[in-house]
Length: 179
Image (cartoon, rainbow, N blue to C red; front, side):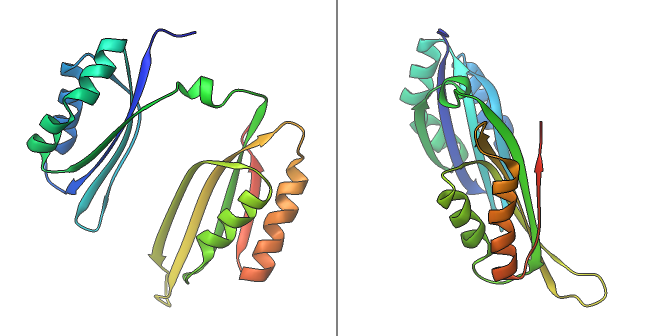
């Protein structure tokens, strides 16, 4: 078992230059190291999810001093202790990518996520984008979901389930193994 401890930080605040530098300095100054992160601008807000690892005292310092990070960045910050990614995702799993595209409308993410839940599968990563279509200017919506599928479940079962959603919701769907 690893002696490293893990913490997840969720940071949301007004977009500005230097926010990532302030966040990573906070983590490093307390003995932590950034393992994984997702960062992006949504509207005028900058959102960060970051998995941090470190010795037990580093994790404790990051949790204890969170008000200093809030004061420095002016952002809303949530901090939570967590397990290592390996400990959380134990077991024989195969990574699968589901991609769906359609004209933008309410309910696409719900339909895809609902079917994934119905299959008893876990979403590992999900990203959505909306863009204007060439020529028509109509809004197109794209979802990419990476899921973990137990070795006992076939890719065909996942594909059939997503094709049901595609037919009902008028989506173009692709399901492919990443291994």
